[in-house]
Length: 222
Image (cartoon, rainbow, N blue to C red; front, side, top):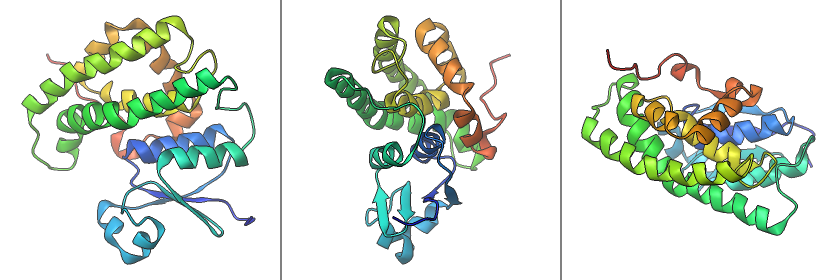
């Protein structure tokens, strides 16, 4: 294994990239974070790292990895501190189930529709569609109901201990919660609200929030 620290490539605003960085921080691992823009994904040199031209990607000596859950497993093996993978098989299954919720539901709707059209579009000079944001808020409410039910019975999504499910879902809900509609949804779901507040207080979440997004939450209506 290389003695160098792992290099993570990604766009700082991406919640997938942020979650990978959170995972390495939680496992007390230093990384060389290489911020890239979306155009860099098509660069032949990057395509050799990730043939799907997505992010994040990791290079560590001869090791090349992509897909965020793969980076979780790698961080878990290299890092120190409390494990972020439950020991009980059912709790592990719950963790992977919630990771799927983050990837397949919270990300495309809460992040890429609600957060994008409420906040990101304006920051990047792209057209915002309030109708898309409104529809996304309705769908996000269903997703948050699932998390509220889990957190009403357990301290964390996979059980009583912090896991990669909390990191991944938390990064997605953090973005949705930076919109006016998202804040209203959180107020109606006290367990998710408290869980997110606790995650936001963690140094790993604070250090990995892209500078572009700091203090850029959607304002409440007058």
